[in-house]
Length: 286
Length: 286
Image 1: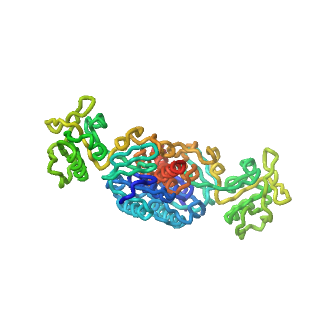
Image 2: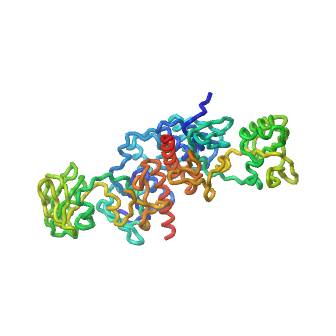
Image 3: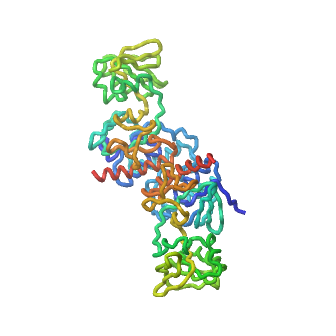
């Protein structure tokens, strides 16, 4: 069975996350790294200004980074974090299909460039959910829409369909939908609006049609951090941190692109290192 | 003949300086890097937490860093900066035996751990100098003490002896003194105090003896930054910078250990990158 409690959970496996994880390991902390197969560095054709890795494609840098993490004893869990909840002494983390706890967390989630569906932000927590495992039970016997942007959404949708009375699957982006359960209705159009009565979701619009639903699950490979963690403070669209890379939530730190410009691999790595040292101080004071 | 004007001069060749220089070159700026053969990283037995360079001795990291700088077109000048003067539009820099100018400067000088001689700080600019080339002419025909910590001091002392009336050479640390000119008096003891009348240096004390002098030249491989640049603001012993790594002096930026804790290679590299981007903005606004 997989270990489920860690000293620290690092969300994201770009330069910030890797640097944070390596520094935590150097200080002998147990580290879980959760990440989706994305990120700005992966798409970089070549990085010229990273000290120690001359003229290297971003994808190759990441390959080296991740091998280094594995060798250092970081537990790598290549699944997106759906939801995170600071619970006082620990942080609870839903990632992939697992629930983990950690004594602290470092968010290194990069910039999540994501257009939201009109109505989405307005109804978060009032019918809009990003976490099937977290909120599925609330929709037992109800009618739900699943809006999925990737293949991993299929499995989650099947879990939801085992609870819900009726499940409609909308694709937000083109992806492989093989494996969807028989009781899932596969829809053709894209959802262009989430509608409600001001208090709760009532329907979704796709093309010219409106579909009445009780809830909407939006499944995307990366979740914007303020959706991932309730109460996380942003500033100008980036995660707010103090000088030591602590967020407004106790035990939650952040580093790299998600904390703002400049978006540079060495800057992210430096911040990840500094955030990890702050996290170590936080852990040792407990 | 060596190029003497650059878009930017980077002082120091540790992770911060290397990162700054690479980013400046990536933005197509001409870069001179001045450095002495020192620094915290060089003495690091092994660094475990630098992303991309697994478990590497500090010295090997530096070798790779410097090769990368050379390949990127950074002009490497392995000599210590003795003095720096922001002149409005340019920064003048005395390094080794050369005078350079640059449109901006980035200080990445690390932590200069240095005990000062009693009286030294008190009489800087009033008889105590760190730069033979800058201040030698003021002592034409006078009596001076040279306090040297390393072999490079020999050549500087010979230059001073060609101007001064009488030159005494004191060693601050053991080093090779071969090559000292015949008209230099080699002294045995260590200088334990620099004395003055409150306005100007009057003598140095070594052992039980006091030697009347008009000036004192202190020659060490690394000069603390506030001695290197008149008017540079410090805070808690580190160089003060704003969030963009600008110091209090226009066109002068700073990054890495010299700006304060934590002393970590990835943090330094990240700050060097960010400081370089600020410097690029400064250059482009000119």
